[in-house]
Length: 238
Length: 238
DNA sequence: ACCGAGCCTTGATTTGCATCAAGGCACGCG
DNA sequence: CGCGTGCCTTGATGCAAATCAAGGCTCGGT
Image (tube, rainbow over all chains, first blue to last red; front, top):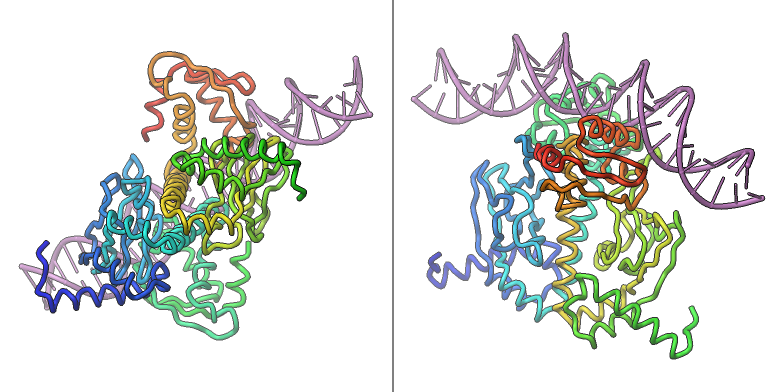
């Protein structure tokens, strides 16, 4: 990659720094250290459906979302895809590959036109050695990912789709637990949402239909209105 | 906790250090640093079925298995249990609670009489600040846990129990892929194994029966003989 | 040795979701 | 404009595993 003229280069760095600052990983880093991190970063643009990385590939580093969304998924030997999670700004992911795990354990694909910051592995490792506090943040971030995975694991096995969808809906609009009807705009296609929840799109569709029939929600395209938040909220606790 | 007489105390420290050394986390640590870690540790004995920690509790630190086994599981709102994973020596777990996640995200219970080393959180964090290399090992360990969780997530959704069991059996005895019949001694009850594989004990029992009927294995109590390793191995790749 | 509790097995039935199938709707492109 | 492709919905059917049920086995305790 060629380096841009000084002026543009520093602009780019500034933009990267600004995004990094949003991330929990770097929110408490000193400006000087942040600049150091930003130096080891590059930007990568992705079209909808473009692969960011594939399972088994050697990793170049980890990523911080700038715009768009990236889906992490695995495919079974017989070719079916299972979404593990979906990341959006300002989340970071693939930190897994910083240490012992050198290859990506799953695939990463853009769900829409996206930009991600690539944090170079080698340089970042050096930085950690000089900035131990940074490593605690990395641990924190991975802990969160791990915690979410544990939750997903339980949800997918132990709770049925009605409950998971109710939970998801209420998480999208915490305010709706009270009476007020809220309007949610889906950020992804229902197909992808179905994948996130671990079911097929048909099943998701039917579940929406059931909720609609019970007067819990109204659905119109990508917009969902929560009519009876209380009842919906009760649903998820099973 | 009272401190033992000097002689016994240092003996105890030595025993702890020896166990810590087994763990991937500390295998490359200098003896001096290892001693520092060991200082911040205590030992905890558990009876079969005794809780090491409960979901939501504030954590005291993380753990390294010395003897026995500990099951990490969650319970659904309606009371059903879902095993997340099972740890044995020399594995470490609950590193999650070192950083931002302060409370245990799941329950930990001894499956048999066990001893675990408790690594005190506060002291260990200090140590990390002085020994950044240590944090890379922590990251490595958590990465592995994360990778395994991702795999479990896919397996439980995307592969049926036959395949998972075949996979598990072959992992227990890598040698069996070749012709030689191998005898596996189950380390846990079949009930727990079922839980690990994400099914009920009835389903596991039936699957064993099917394998038995096909002449793939012979089962006698807690001992399983792999008769046709090749065929079993083929099973898992679906 | 006996008894009871928990574990394991096997059978019958249920069920939650996937799969297969078909039709409607919307959007981008020629 | 019209057409196709992909997304969404709804219906019919299939299936893996859960659940319910019952009997046998094992092992630790009195």
